Image (cartoon, rainbow, N blue to C red; front, top):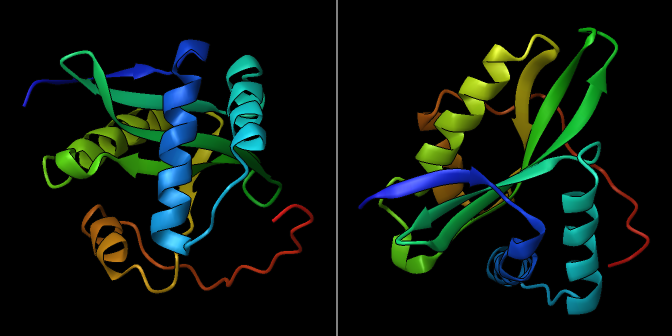
Length: 152
């Protein structure tokens, strides 16, 4: 399978939003507000201080994506890149799309002098994702996540 990675552009916003909606439904059984979701994707694509998306294309069709956002660590005097909004088309799963994205992000992060590490969160019951992340040398942290969501 011949695949390429590229930074996402505003022209990809509809596809990215669709993938995000599919991911939310599949992993958390949540139906996202499509209008809010599209605006959120477009906001990030317009403002690189929020983060960036990468997409994987096969024959000029997007088959996978991930988003990076930033967290400053005063303990490390550096930035963690958070891997988020990971989605791979069902037909492309098991073909190395996520590994390709992860390897690319890992290389970019290691070469950036201000990046101190990579982080992600995973749905507690998503055993397949956990196995994938552990195969890529990521490990569970000793933190649990708490939140107060004002939108969902």
